[in-house]
Length: 210
Image (tube, rainbow, N blue to C red; front, side):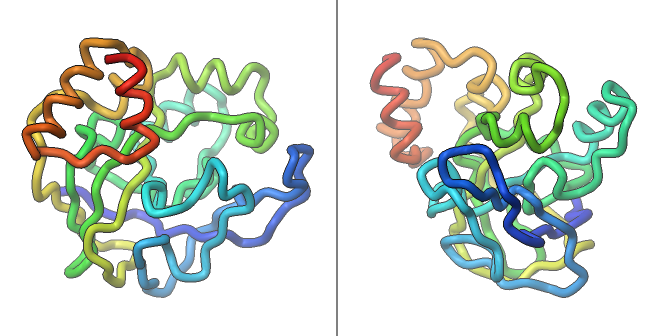
């Protein structure tokens, strides 16, 4: 059983050198319970809707265990929200979750793992670390985007339970680090069998590799 250590939403939009001109990556923990609906956390926003947000990226989860690895490697704190995550978890292997795996958070919310977070130039600027995108990619701890299956209200401290796992073996981390024809075929077969419903973005990549 995992736990939701922190629930984070945007604190303020920050100026950014990217094409949009601002970024909503500045997530900060909130103390009160918040409602989660199909497009995400109440009061949260995404500045670049092309690459963030929407039904298949309603929430972004990152494991505190992985954050501590980065804290040691970078010799700096990695507080909840620094990576732009909405959910900082404990006791849950987020990057090791299978695509299509479902979690219950609190009493009501049910979410489904859709695919890994892909690091971008905005994330690089946020961190201010040399070659950050490359380093983050090579580490293979991307965290997971989540789709909302059943809306609900959640708060820091809520339990997180894995309620179902498709069993195909393709994890967020394995797809992030080594997406290939074999994994694509596995996901395609799982979807055809009805054990997983791939996000459109992922299905497009699977079709190209398969």
